[in-house]
Length: 525
Image 1 (spheres, one colour):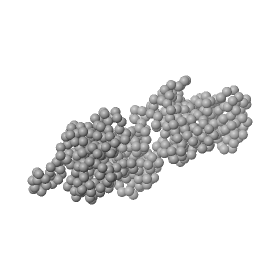
Image 2 (image 1 turned 90 degrees about the vertical axis):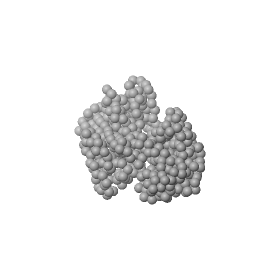
Image 3 (image 1 turned 180 degrees about the vertical axis):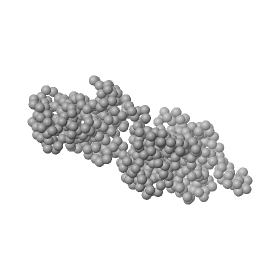
């Protein structure tokens, strides 16, 4: 039974999901780093929010860990690169709190426009300063949305409801999507020149860190208001303070800070700044939604192999997982077959999906092919870290699809290019579920791959099969299956012989020494 550690507070309903799905779930909230390191090795899954830090050290101490699920969007507290190298899937829940966070951004914008926090403090102090708190209307103003994904698109929709004009910047925003959202697509410089209010909804990456630098903030139109409910570190907080003091920026509303918890900041002393303690996702509905989602996602992965909302793996829906499973077995076998036969430098590979295989989600299949291909050359390879390992070795993988293929309903072909040149291996599914090898080096064959398999490439000459069988018999090796294929009469031939036990090294040497043998190798599946 897979075990899951819940290291941050989740809804009791989320814990119940794990139990109902047949997983063992331990709730241990508030662990110190040392306590986490001591127990994490027992678990297959880890469910967290933002408090628990999943570092490279934690991952190293977790040999059984398969998945980390973050109840929320940001994974700043997870070393995703280290998780990928360790073969651990990292998931988040990008949709569960999108509405809540968007609503908070709109609330912060309105509070900033009407000086509500400062007016509240003044009124509570017994003052009545109507003339002091002169706000601005949002109707007719231009809102600049930086990042038009799940949250940014909801903010744009709500802003249009407030009769604001909306311009948006997002390098991945298509013209069609911008039109659908009802926003004008612009570059970041134009957005800064035109926007009366700028709101940020982008992750914190090396590309977006300090996106609103001192220079960028200074390039914004005079009187702009800045809203950040996304990630601390997107804005230079000291520069923001200075430009508010100088009067270039009218004010700011921040829910996130470069250092959290934010116990002090130059911005805290400014009346024209509204601050909240990272409340973007803090509603009862959102907390419940993300907790339930992450529990279902972790359970789906550990039980069925479904991969939803992963940051370092292609998604495989719960519906697709059973349909893909036989193909995943075939893909790994093809990669393993080619990898075990590779004796010189591997330069690249091409995978062709034909027939029904061309309609499938090919990304997890190509990652399994890479896993099989690289396993003979690297330790601890899995479908999560295989692409990174291939890239580090300069191995390029190309995929091709063909709707139709002669003779088969479905076919996957792997071509590898080595220092000795290219070679191919193809496989299909028999009765839709049983992986079969149907071609090696252009030679037709029909074979299953399981256990110990002896691969022999030879010249097609009389007496070879008898000599090989006698040698194996004399060595006391029982043949389970014997599959043959040849290029043409007298040409190259291939034998795949399933053996009930491993072939001793000295017997393999004797096989290699047989007349007409080009190559002989023991494979394992």
